[in-house]
Amino acid sequence: MGIMGHNLTSSDGTTAQAGLGDTHWNGGTQYGYRKAGGAIAIYDLVAEDNTLAVCVAGTTTISGAKPSGFCIPQFAVASGEFFWAPIGPIAPVSWDNATTFKVNAAASCAADVKLYTTAAAGVIDDAASTTDLIDGLQLTETITTAAAAKCIAVGRLGSNTQD
Image (cartoon, rainbow, N blue to C red; front, top):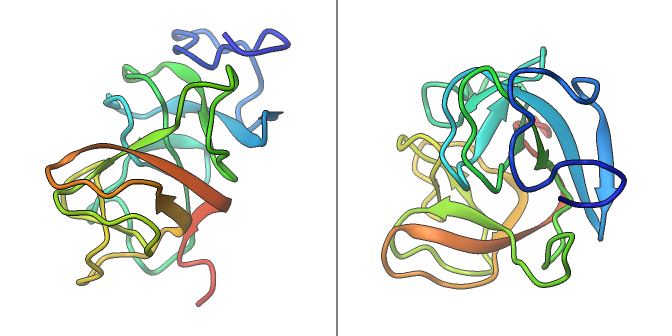
């Protein structure tokens, strides 16, 4: 559940329990309150638009021409539901001081390197190709097959913020 009544383990359903765009700090991680613009799988990288209605990040949702923010829900979210998700910085462990944060990563993704969006919606990779860098996000483990991988973020999650 988290502290101070913020639900950090599941969505709030279709009735908002906080202000859209509100932020909350817990254990070194900043969470943002968002609304799903479509179905979101657990650990998907999610792109934010200027209304904070979010959709799963991929090459069709990130243009590269404008700054984008991201969040990484740690549970599945249905379209139209409100939820709290890490927006960065992201600490090594969650509100319970035991659970690690995760993000969906492509096969053979390395720890401690820059990470990028991919054509696979919600999935990140360490191969740059023609996709966008995700500022500050890094894996804390190397994986060999596509999986949810442990991660941290040193700052607010974003892309195309330095051009």
